[in-house]
Structure formats: structure tokens, C-alpha cells
Length: 444
Ligand code: PHE
Image (cartoon, rainbow, N blue to C red):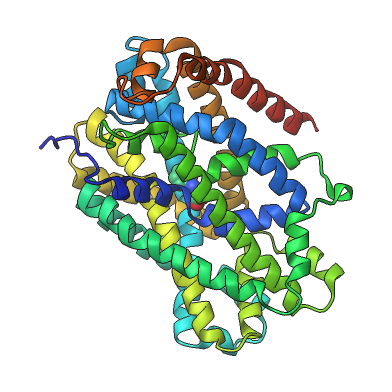
């Protein structure tokens, strides 16, 4: 049976859902390890530059495509550019959704493990967290099962639908997440010696600049804001006509950046505070890679009073943040199957869960495959998708649609100068920026 097209029921729910998509493992797991790798404050500066230049304008572009077409990622291009090949931008986006879910779910599984280990007190007793993490990595069956649990949990919310599943879960989970993050940031910053960690985050050290910092920061920006693959487009297709697209994209980008910075503060101030040797800590953080969060953090908790409580809270928070993101990723693929193939939610979910499960099994088994999916999505598929979305809205799309969507058909006051400037960014600045960084990253 064909579903009637849904909409978010409230403004808060809409913001919570979009911010819930953006805020995820990207902020709390990927951002700190990329920051450590990219030399701290320098990476953060380039990252913020990418958020401003590509992030906000492209989020608006996805929003206006979604809301004006009221369709899924591929359907939007179908409707707005019938008979052209633009639909491939959307189709590749849907494929990216699969690719991201294929490794993201594995990390979600790790967060579940660490959460269970923390509430049962095991993680506090373990003395060697590096060993704990590698034993988890070695236990493929456990990783696969945990991944499956998270996958089914996500599917459960998608099955419940846009308002009852996506919106109501985000409305509860996002404020909770913020509360936890604030408490933990304060705790971390007030540790004795936290200052060095904060300096690493906020005081640029030019000696640390690497040639890959631009592509890494750009990939992180796309990944963290859920851009370039039709996720924000899909969510915007459920926005109502009063939603202020410019304001919403700025709000979501600010929230997302604040969460990433808070995660950085939590991790780096506690890391520096609890280790005596500053030189080794940086190299340790860098070497931590994807394991940073799962080795360094529990190790740090272990040295704090009340460690079981802190680590349970932290990993609960992480699982919550991850869940609102996996929900958004899965909705991209679901909406596509629902509308393009006229499937029911249930049937679509059967395909998606099976497909993601297969990718997830490979990622759990092979770290090479895992890294491949991570890199190909964040550093290739998403920025290139973003490039084409920018070109599409800048050059192809009827200016009238842009104007109607940005001003909500004249009821919001954005002058002609603003619209011109926006159009200039999409036509030239953003595409050129993405291309330059991309080529520089490939050659450099
Ligand atoms: N933005 C999410 C995060 O930071 C990941 C994501 C990417 C979600 C793409 C949806 C689409 O974790």
C-alpha cells in the first residue's frame, strides 16, 4: 500500500530531527580522532572554514530541493529536472547512505558493548583498555551481533514512521544528549591540568600543519553535517512550508559544531589532565585512530572518581547520538524505495536491513574494508555529491524556486542582494572550493 507523504509535526521536532542527523559518531568519535591527527587547532580552523563555505550553503540547497520537490533524494531530481541525468546525483546519494551505514553500524555496535560493559562495571575493572578494545575487535561474532542489534533498533524507529518514529525519538534524545554533554564538558574542563588540552584544541601550532588537512577537514564537514548524499534533502521533504530554511541550516550547523567542540573538550582536556607526559599524549591520541574513543576515554574514566557512572553516561550518550544519525541514514534509503519502487515501509526495511547487514559483516571482519567505506564516503562520495548539488541549484534550477523556498514565498525578508550572493556561492565559490581541495588532496 502506498503511504501518504508525511511531515514533521512541530518546529522543535523538525530541528531535533535535523540536528539529530548531523550530531552523531561523526562529532564524538570521528571529529576528535581527525583533530588529533590533523594537529589540533589548525584542523579545527580549517574545519570551521569548510562549515561556513560549504556546510551552511549546501544545507540550504538540500533543504530547498527537498521541500520544493517533496520527494526522496533521487525523486527530487526526477521532479525538478525530468528527463535529465541529474537523478544520478540522488541515486549515488542513496548508495552513499548504504555505504555509510555499512561501517557506521559497526561503531554503533562498539558503543553498545562499552555501554553494557560500563553499567555492569566490567570496563572499570579492566586494566588495559587497549587490550579490551583489541579483544572486541578480534571477536567478530560479538561485533556482528551488536551491529545487528543496533541495526534492528534503527529499523524499529524507521518502521514507526516520520512523526512517531523519527520525530518523537529525536525530541527526547537530543535534549538529553545536550544535557549529558554539558555536564561532561564541565567535569572535564575543571580537571587539574585540563588547560593543555584546551590549548591543543584552540591554539594553532603552525608546525603541525599537514598537506592533507584540507581534504580531511572538508570530508569531516560533509560527514558531520550529513551533506552531499541527500539526507538533509530527504528530511526537508518533511518540513512544513513555514520552516525558515536559512535559519534552520544555521541553527543545525551551530549545534553540530558546538557538539563536536564539546566532544573535543571532553576528550582532550581529560586526556591531557590525566596524563603527566604531554608529548606522549599527543602521539598516543594520534595513534589511537578509530580506537581513540574506545581506548583513551575509558582509560581516563578509570582514573576519575565515580568512573562507572561517567563511562556509562558517556557511552549511553554516544549510542543515542549515533541512533538519531542511523535513523536519518536509513530514512534516505527507505524514502527512496518507498517512492521510487512503491514499496511498503516493511518491505523496504527488509531489503535495507539485509543489505546493511552484509556490508556490516564485511566491515566487522576486515578493518581494511571498514576504512575503505569510511574514506570513500567522507572524502569522495559526499564532497562530490555536494559539488553536484551545488552546481544543480546554482546553474540548473529555476531561480524562482530558490527565491520562493528561501523567502517562504515572500513572507520572509531576504533581499535580492542576499539571493544573488547565495547564488554566487553555489555557482562558483563552493564548487571551486570543493574541486581545489579535492585535487590538492589527491595530488598533495
Ligand atoms: N552526520 C552524522 C554524524 O556526524 C553521520 C551522517 C552522515 C548521518 C550522513 C547522515 C548522513 O555522525
